[in-house]
Length: 452
Image (cartoon, rainbow, N blue to C red; front, side, top):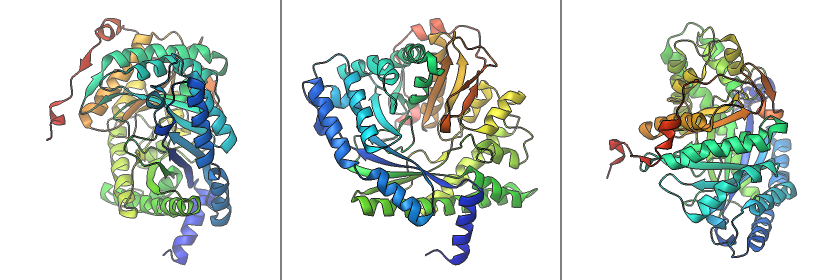
């Protein structure tokens, strides 16, 4: 039970430090929606999603009003559509994406994830058709998110898939050039993707999940930064303990919302994902936390160590607060969505190479960064390969969400609006990776994957 002091602390976190439930995400299995005809499959997908998620948004609003806890997003994740559509006789899976989009509009959710494929060891026919459909699907829908898992610690890296991802991203950027390449903001390439991630753009409902489940993502970078204001000059042991205790409080709030939503919707509670997911709002930044530890500007020497401490302490506090912590749970470092990260880039303290180093110890990877529109597809693929290698060797989830801005040059800006924020176009290395990416095949799994 919460005592009066804890209640007052939580209210202060919400009122002044941007504490919120970032998303309640309903995962829905679509495995029984496979049909031979693509239109029949699309109809079954739409019907099931709208039936299961009919009350999701209203329930979220009711809890938000009654508990006084902001619930920013209500979302849906579904079985990877490559698996659902594989039985169909169509080469084009875009109609399935449009069915997802219609269902999202009908239910009122802001995003629906799962136009996805898992190809870390190889392609099936459904995987190939889905990946070929991604650019058109994202260009012609507003709320659909897509992901492809190209690597895992047990399988290694599917370099054929990695090569294809660079070409796919270039096509998405071209088809959504009028919006600054917005379609690329809805597409993420993973290594070691998890089945219960409530955050977009990478959410999908994994094969090991039940028929329907409710996952909650909680965020609070501003809360952690405010807590560290009382630790100025303190040793790192005390810093870690402060972060851990703060993460505990945040996670308890998330579990409260998750269980209440689960009860009202009659859907099993899945996990709480305690990811410090920033927003463009001032004071809601992971970079601000790192600078509060004593760094003059994020990206300078010491940043990776500070981020490692933060990520570990967040996980330890979350695990103490809930039996079911899952998803990604840690700290996100998206450039466009974090005002502090963007500030570091503009100061010159943060670079793409330093961001890559930071992904060795954070929750996800290279997220929401913009590059010049003339960046070769092979360079994009090589960036993905580097990030996948970090994930595979370190047995962690990593990802890349990159936006090539058509006609954009280094130093230019692109604005996506809302939680997606705006990005300054970053330089990439001018030296070619073409011959490297042309090899194809598979980079074998590391020796430590042989654990049986």
